[in-house]
Image: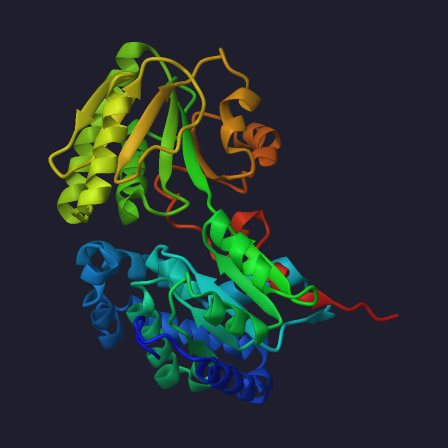
Length: 413
């Protein structure tokens, strides 16, 4: 794979696409069940802390700006769900059992900076369907994806030869257009600007599937109706907050808490203690000078609106005084805790992120009530605290799924 500074010329991109297309007959000679079994086998190696693939990935932790302990946990937890049964269940859930779907003969994929389990899983979905993949990872993520491809070539060679990696800057319009010209379908994981740019590169006959920016939140009623014990809830929220340094779309940014002032203050203090325990296991990465300046300014603004608690490892909890709308916050383990009252309607509270709400963790609240009210704002997953960062393989990512958007349907009869 070319170095990020060594921009591939048009011939290199076309050659990579030709190699990927050449893998199609062998890839489709395998059944979906066989491809699922191969992915399970690869996942077992990546989740095993003793395997050389797991250890090689940990050697990349610094470049990914993650602690080795957090990355190891993510690989063990995330890849443990890579099972043949799980992949086939996903296939059945999204595409049914009757057939009639057609997967692209070559799928393009643009991968933004993400959390490692999601980044490794993303190209597996088209491979499961029998589609070779031309993948351009985000800057800094090439080594991990190159390692993953190498592991595929050794452990599941038919899948490995169907995955080709490209490396060029996102600002290189010429390379982007050349890559786009090779594929039937382009899957873009990235910002709204990235999605808009790749849309411009495609012709009317090509399709684009976009997984854009999202954020997640939480809802807690501290009253006696909560089925989840408070200690379990607090431990779970601390895990959700600290995992991946709050960088993922499933990371909680804002949590609404119903209860008396004294209850909410005690909750925040107890949460800080659990966050500090988690920090000792998963130390937070150091922001750059520019990131630190932005973070300082954003946190100072939040502190003017309420009380704050800072941990020894760099996290901050901000307990705001008034109910209000959901906030994204500056990230870097900065959690906004808002009072939850009846002063605002659901529409008023979540309108600012209309269409961008991903996951909502809840405690002491009836989930079915929330589903009907918040789906219009983008909500596509409800879970308990402690499970936000651990989505099931069958989760309908962004509400559209992981397989269904990739295929076309031709009914017969």
